[in-house]
Image (cartoon, rainbow, N blue to C red; front, side):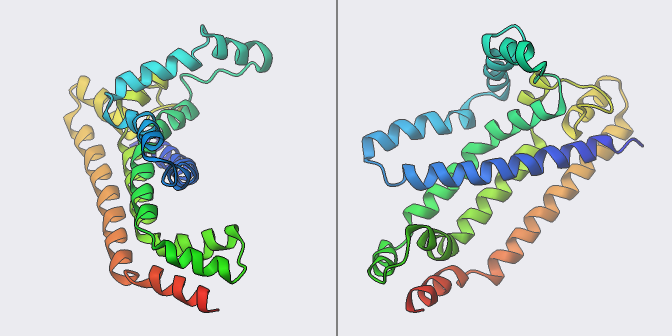
Length: 231
């Protein structure tokens, strides 16, 4: 049994999760502070990949990165870099699709943050960077963890956009999702079922781990924030 689809799927999901972790937190933190009208506009734009069909998302990515487009052609001409039909193009597709989950979850966590803790920290002369990483992030940890896990799970199971921009090439771009589809098309039900069970097992382990962390650290965020301010 060729395990490349498993390795490739985990690689794509992990890299995508890291990308959307930082980009989602950055966007969520600053959008949460914007006026309601501006926030609504950004919400529509940043959440759109969540409601669009994955194939439509893949189509838009191809419109930007395909070799016959302006940007894709520029990359080919100046750097001889072909983005589409590679495993890292699947990272781009998975990141775009998973980003709204991280963004929406993180934004909700930031909006629930007790701003009096921030103001108290500022009166003590603490820097904004210190306040963000040592007070706000611990306070919002549960929402951040939930968003990261959801983004990872979404990237792991992504098929529509990934199949359009990366295709299916055994040993190069194959993922669990595309492998299941190809095996089903060729009537290889036994191996298709094996890959489905592998995907289910990974997803179940990740969700169980998150539930364990939530039960263990439910009050850690608020306690850590109070300790930092008093310190």
